[in-house]
Length: 353
Length: 237
Image (cartoon, rainbow over all chains, first blue to last red; front, side, top):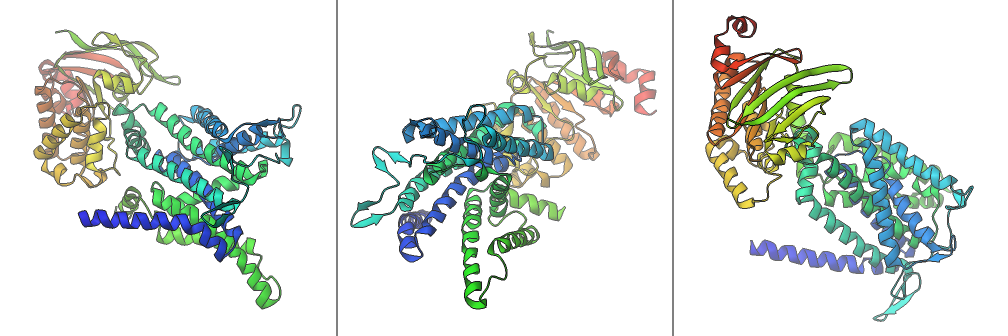
């Protein structure tokens, strides 16, 4: 037991050290653009972990999840850009964005309480599109979102005078902007993962599992099904609101384009691919689906170099491989790459009975 | 005896269809009452209305004197009414232990809960042996036992049972009614819905006969069991 504990600490320390030097290795090894890719994958991990609360824990299929990311991003964009001339500090905007997203989560949850499965999926899908279309059209009669052009010149994230957009020298090393964002995103990602793990093991998490399994039986044990479903929507939305605010500050630009249906589907795929309900699986899924498509870009360069022209467009190839990966997954690992104990059990059950 | 549960002129409707049409029913403290009737008589609907899972369209439901007709099920469980739903309603992918833990969801006294669950494991070694296995892998009878014990862990004063014997082997039915008898000894009142009239009346103090949404007859269990009309209609004699 003691030995296992010690080895857990060793791997924990190694993991921590690895995560700490990762951006330095990547920037010197394969270039700064890859640090940006890693930054984005951290944002997607936050989103996937958040959506996992709604879909994986509580079993509510949400296809409009990206809308909450949009709410968080636009909150930041409107409160820290020349659009309204507001320049609120980061520590004020992030909670506002998270709270606004949570409110939207409840707004979506309340009318859909009685819906299940496919029907819930359809309504949430519509909700996601409605939010995007609103963002696209709220430039008349009063210009709020600047319509399809989006909002530009968003303030970079700045905490206590430390700007994440400027270079900093520390311990003889020069840290670029994407590297600094990496450390900020990593901190917040770890915090959100911690919250998600604690929720899973809590009374609330067990109640969500019961609702997912059998709503009627859950109600019979005294669970307040309505409130807990709303809480799941609000919690999931809060995670997306935080990620959205970070995205706006990091990118410096938001437009409705970034929040289309494909993004919602992508985040859902990350969860399904990695293993629904299991946090390590979800993290794996989110990382794979953000890093691999970027890696595929190299295939275009190689084709150019070896064949003299581009035979298959990397973008097409990406979708092709993506589809192929999903089919292979369905056949060989239907519960995901790294499934939770529960999901694995569920698939084994269906196979044996 | 004072009435623990008093249902008066209760009506429940699904759209235009009235499933329960003005039912009066009482269950006294520590009493065992059964509700007998054919398919579609409205028995399950009545139980769901009492448990707060189906809104009523009229009439009143009182539990220990308080009106509960418009309370959500989560509050009703806390007041002391537990429903064992039709078809068991266990969480089949959660383990046996997790199922039992969910039964005590509204309670906070962790030590006492653990003690009670240990006693269940000792009494039913099959549940104890399989505590870490998914409940869906249990046999039908074991699932029903699990469902009953899960309901009892909320410390109810009134247990509502919807067809606990449905689809089970005679030996298992016996074990289930023995469990219910044990629970009754600790002071739990019961309202039992059954299609098996013989079985239900043998384990009840009083009975109600329900036909197409209304109470057709009520009497002591022994009188009902001796009634020749009922014998013909429900015992298949």
